[in-house]
Amino acid sequence: MQFVRELQRNIARDDRQAIAARVRYPLTVFVGGVRIPIPSVAALVEQYEVVFTPALKAVIADARPSAGRPAGAALTVTADFASIGADAVRIERIDDALKVTRITVPLAAASAPDGATGSSLAPRHDRPPQRLLFGVGQLQRAGALAAGERDAYLITATKNQLLEMRITGVAGRSVVARMMNARTGKPIDERAQNGVRTWVGRIPEDGEYRIDVVRREAAGEPRLSYLMTVSKR
Image (spheres, rainbow, N blue to C red):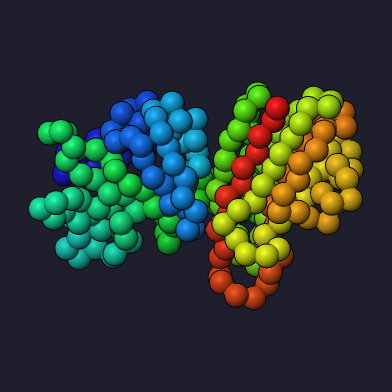
């Protein structure tokens, strides 16, 4: 399918604009049961890393016609639509053009595509903190954690800036965030030290702050997905 081959090339180059042009808007993205609306090209480009995770990229890269392929890598074509993987990417004809109409982000890639050895699929504990680069406004990051795992993020903020951080998509306190000064390791406050689902407050001083999203619950689902929303005002 030519559309999928071109999408694979766009993904391999991380060509955000070309990928965004292949989407029908508004787009609905599902991450571990959390629904993320993407209203425009600009919004998809901004939230590219939330949507096109290493797991989703691997599924798209390995998509081939379904005969003899594992379900997670299959490309299925019907009279009404085409889908990649277990409906990870839905493709439909809209006004005589093929467009991506829905995305369901897989929690993890079962394996890397043939010949892939890049660090994007490395174990989480080997990855450095992800730097969140944005000014005033809001961004989101999604992830999935096994027992004992954590995702780390770095954010720059100024003294007295209002910061809001929320963890959604999980029940109770199975996944929480801890926030600290990245230079000193000092927690922003006692709540941030213990771990919270929601933190709203003023930044105490100029600097870089680290957010650790931590899986606290050891039992239950093998992996728990979460959505983190951070805003600065």
